[in-house]
Image 1: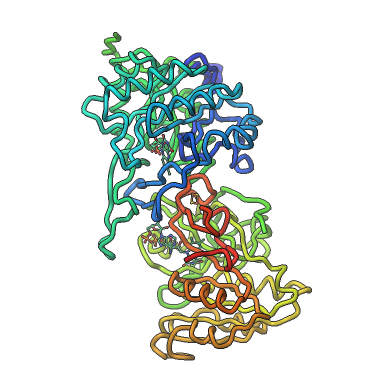
Image 2: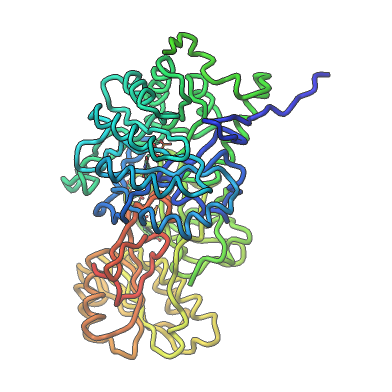
Length: 311
Length: 257
Ligand SMILES: Cc1cc2nc3c(=O)[nH]c(=O)nc-3n(C[C@H](O)[C@H](O)[C@H](O)COP(=O)(O)OP(=O)(O)OC[C@H]3O[C@@H](n4cnc5c(N)ncnc54)[C@H](O)[C@@H]3O)c2cc1C
Ligand SMILES: Cc1cc2nc3c(=O)[nH]c(=O)nc-3n(C[C@H](O)[C@H](O)[C@H](O)COP(=O)(O)O)c2cc1C
Ligand code: FES
C-alpha cells in the first residue's frame, strides 16, 4: 500500500515564509480583517490589503461596479482612509490574525509613493509593500505606461522601504516581459501580474455607460488566460518571484498560474462573490497535488516554463 | 441594529413559485440562519450562469425557512425564476435593518414601491409579533397597476390599514403613492420606506419637509455585499458610506438622494 502523504503547501516568498501560496488580491478584501467571522483567516498564505494612499480618498461616483460575462468592471477610485488612519485600528486588527501582511500602495507622484511607504514600512507588523503602478482608474496616465517614471518610483521607494517591495503591473503594456525586467532592474523584489484590464460596457437600454467613469478595470474568470500569459512571458525574463493574479476561482487555476511561473497567487473577484472560496481553493490545491503525487508545491513553480533565459 | 451572525453557505430550494406575473416567491431551507434575520437585511444570492450574486431582501423567515419575493428584471432573476429545485449559494443576513425601537412611541407608516414591499412585509411581521409594538401600522403601497400589487392580504391579516395607488388607476388612487402620503403623514408617525429611487426621493423630501422621522432602504449595485469592494458607495450626511454594510437602511434625515 502506498502511503498518501499530505503534500506541503509551504513556500517562501521574498524571504517571507507562507503556509501556502494563496493571498488575497488588493481591493477585493478590504483592510483584511473584516471577514474574520465568515472564514478562518489564519488558513490563508498572507493578506494583501486594499490600496492605501497618503491622504484619504473618497473614490469615484456611482455606479462603480458593472457585471459582464464571467467577470466584472470596477472603477472604485481607490477609496481608502489614508496611511495614517490605516496604521491605527485597521492594522492593529489585521495584525491579530497572525499572518504576513502585505500593504498595497499608490500615489499621484513619486513623493507620495515614497512618503506612504515610509510610514507603512516602519510598522513592524507589515511584511511587504505592493506598489500599485497600474491602477487604470486614475484619470491621469498610469505609472506603468511611463517607463522612466516606473523606474523612478521603484528606485525611490526601495531607498526608504524597510521591507521587500512587490511591483504590481498593468497587463496593458506593449511588452510585459520587458517591463517586468525593468522593474527588477530598478530594485523590485517581486512582481504581481496582473492588475485589471482597461475595459468598458454600455447599457443599451439606457444609452449610458455602465460605470460613472465610462472606463474601468476588468477582472474575474474572463481575464485568467490573459494573465497566465503575462506570468509565462515575464517568468522567462526575470529572477524575482511572481504573484499570479487574475480570474482565479479554483485550486486548478492556482496551479495553472504556478506551472506558468507564479510563485504565489492572489485571488480577487472570486472572493468578493464568496469569501469561503479562498479556503476551498487551498484544499483543492492539496487535492490536485495528491492526485499528481507531488509532495511539495515548490516543485510546480515554472515547471512548464523551461525556456527561462534568466538575466 | 447590527447583524449578529452571517453565513456563506449552500441551501436547498424548497419552492420557487410565481405569485403573479413576473413576481416570484422563493423559499429555501436555511436551518438556524433564519433566526438571525432582521427586517431590512438582505442576502447575496448566487445564481448559476451570472458572475455576481444578487442582493435580495428577506421577505419572511419562519423557523428554518427563509423566503424572498423578487421580480424578474434581467438575466440573473430570469435564471433564478426558472430554478424549481436544487441548491443555492447564499451569503447573509447582511447589512443594517430598520430600527424597531422607535415604533414603541410612534405610529408606524410603511411606504412601498414595487418589490420594496418585501422588506416591509418582514418588518410588519416582526412588529406584529413583538409585544411592545401595540399600535397597528398603515401601509402606503404604490405600483404600476393592479397586477403589480403583492401580498396586500398579508398586511391586512396582521391588522394593518392598507392604502393603495396605481399609476393606471386599476386599483386604489390613480397616481403616485407619495401624493397621498404627503397629505396624510404626521410628525407623530415614523416612516419606513423601500422602493424605487424616484419614490424614495419624494418620500425623503416629504419627511424632511414635515419633520417626520423614519428610515429609507436604498439600492445600489453590489459586488460583495459585505463592505469589502467599496462598490456600493452612497453619500450619507456628507460622508461616503457603503449601502451593503452601513445600510441598506439609513435614517431618512441623513440621506441626500
Ligand atoms: C439591498 C437590496 C435589496 C433588494 N431586495 C430586493 C427584493 O427583495 N426583491 C427584488 O425583486 N429585488 C430586490 N433588489 C433588487 C435586485 O437586487 C435586482 O433586481 C437584481 O439584482 C437584478 O438582477 P438581474 O440579473 O435580474 O438584472 P440585471 O439588470 O441583468 O443585473 C445586472 C447587474 O445589476 C445589478 N442590479 C440590477 N438592478 C439592481 C437593483 N435594483 N439594485 C441593485 N443591483 C441591481 C445586478 O445585481 C447585477 O449585478 C434589492 C437590491 C438591493 C441592493
Ligand atoms: C472591486 C475591485 C477593487 C480593486 N481594487 C484594487 C486596488 O485598490 N488596488 C489594486 O492593486 N488592485 C485592485 N483590484 C485589482 C485586483 O487586485 C486584481 O488584480 C484583479 O481584480 C484581477 O484579479 P481577479 O480576477 O482575481 O479579481 C481591484 C479589483 C476589484 C474587482
Ligand atoms: S457591495 Fe462591496 S462594499 Fe458594498
